[in-house]
Image (cartoon, rainbow, N blue to C red):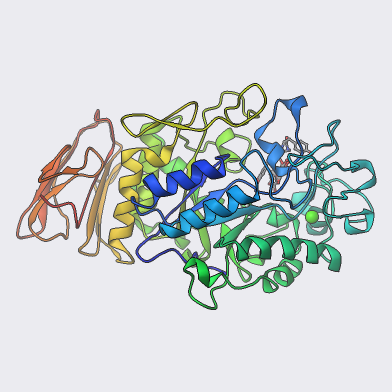
Amino acid sequence: FKNPHYATGRTTMVHLFEWKWDDIAAECERFLGPRGFGGIQISPPNENLVIWSRNRPWWERYQPMSYRLVTRSGNEQQFANMVRRCNNVGVRIYVDAIINHMTGTWNENVGTGGSTANFGNWHYPAVPYGRNDFNWPHCVIQGHDYACCADRVRNCELSGLKDLNQRSEHVRTMIVNYMNRLIDMGVAGFRIDAAKHMWPSDLRVIYDRLRNLNTAHGFPSGARPYIYQEVIDLGGEAISRNEYTPLAAVTEFRFGMELSRAFTRGNQLRWLVNWGPQWGLLGSGDALTFIDNHDNQRGHGAGGNILTHKRPKEYKGAIAFMLAHPYGKPQLMSSFSFHDTEAGPPMDGSGNIISPSINSDNTCGNGWVCEHRWRQIFQMVAFRNTVGNTAVTNWWDNGGNQIAFCRGTMGFVAFNNENWDLNQRLQTCLPAGTYCDVISGEKSGNRCTGKSVVVGNDGRAQIVIGSHEYDMVLAIHMGHQV
Ligand SMILES: O=C(/C=C/c1ccc(O)c(O)c1)N[C@@H](Cc1ccc(O)cc1)C(=O)NCCCOc1c(-c2ccc(O)c(O)c2)oc2cc(O)cc(O)c2c1=O
Ligand SMILES: [Ca+2]
């Protein structure tokens, strides 16, 4: 359950938060496939409660009403079309699975597919679920429970969300049928939302009942779905992520917290020389890594001061380091603009999501940030694909906020977060030649639209990153010689 089953040579997934299925299919064909992205995490495809009283907040998609595939992103036919078209261009689909709970109690009670429910009686006829399928006696998780009481964190309600009993055979059957239907449609795996709130023993039973991936969509026979479990664990809680790593991969929230700190002015990039488990991070093969996600980019998630698209230079620096360093399996966030941390995606007067527009410079409009289309980010996805599993070698730093390292003989990257220029002759480990810096520009024909770097026969080159430049990174790798 720890292998994403990316197509050959691909390494990175992007969370297209709140995108519609038709738009995702188009993005696979026009951008993500050609640019070598490995996969996409999609928003929950199951029917959710429509919450107009909070003006369609982003978190309404985390209020399940049924496992019918009908949301503001599209219907079952559009979902199947998206999976087929993305798999056809080598881009995998990972589903955000909400199996810990059903809705909280709201005045509204109609779902995106028209289903209704009676929350007070724990009655969800569109699944169907009834009172016996939820944990009993009724209790709500309190703040101190996270530190003291693992059983309450699992068996009581998170934020008033009706807490399913995954020990019940009926509940297991409903969940497994939902996930197997998605596997048969060609998805490559799942994000397990709120995994910390479910017993590992129950999750193991559910995972073991999942079918192998569908070979008709290009997966090898016997391939198990990729599963990454959302476990927010910054230490100090009764529940540890180590209870979940024997089952499947785990979201490593410390990754984004520590890199955000390291790339925020006043800290030291040289500390990153031993980046990885020595920082208290999970084993590399267990870790789904990211800088920010849909939850903590709004500030109330784990880890305090997380870098997001709202601080572009530092954010691109941290993203470049995530993609240049071999640790973990990275996920990029692709957001819509927001001021109100509850706001949902751009929508018209009827509540329909507005599609991203694509500008002439290949950026997005209509309120979509599309970080994955920023040159400094998608070019580093190509860097990660090129360098494969080569090791970090020739680490250099200035004792402060200037660092550089090689990836085997395939790539070289340098960072300058000082408030003075980096101007050093450094070992790039690359064969002699002239390389285009993929951060400040790209290779166009036989010239570089940004910086070019001349590597001598000794592998050394003059590396310059001015402290006032638009970006703090320089990256060169095989395939971008002129
Ligand atoms: O802000 C939110 C939603 C946050 C959220 C949604 C999806 C996630 O994957 C997530 O990590 C957080 N929800 C709002 C609004 C809300 C939602 C439901 C409700 O009954 C009442 C209010 C909110 O204020 N929630 C309370 C604080 C956030 O507490 C939530 C967590 C959560 C936060 C910190 C943790 O350490 C943790 O283990 C879990 O996970 C969710 C998962 C869900 O599937 C649905 C949820 O409503 C939530 C969720 O409320
Ligand atoms: Ca639970």
